[in-house]
Image (tube, rainbow, N blue to C red):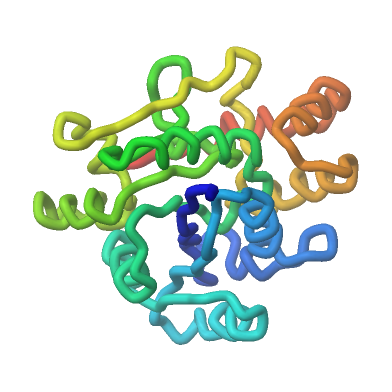
Length: 250
């Protein structure tokens, strides 16, 4: 029997840079639907759960979940760590993958690779892909990967800190304090240029991703990077925009 893990997608509609982006349609489907479809393609992903906020503005997202029969949990907007723990407790999750709702191109091969490693060792707390210099991929805007983490590790964070940045960025305490956790890392292939951004934080990202979707029949990482080689104009636009909008965590 194939071992499985639950996926928890963090999502809200109140993004200051691109409000309501997760419910915005891109190539005929809502952004978050593309994320869900990508996760469902993996035989190792069991339940897909949306972790949203208890703010009134996210009621529309809740209605989408109910209409689509997707399990959801509502929690604190700013304490995302406790939102994940709360969702895990309600749905009795042990190990999960943490997924961002603005990444429509989750790479199936990389997802399965990560889960093969994570699920093969019951003692692992955290598993992530890393860049050539060892930086966890969550700190990058590539948007093609997920993180795997145990709920035990998330609860350990709460015991060790209440610092705001660690409550907002769910796994940050883990990769910044590796001595306290059992971590597995997967180096990115040398062929992957981690300077690209395929996540959707801004309307410009949305336009770029829509062009990618209109150009491809499959959204695998290999297909996307092949397109970047063929379409110099789109490739240059994405790279230039990426340089101007790097992730900055305190």
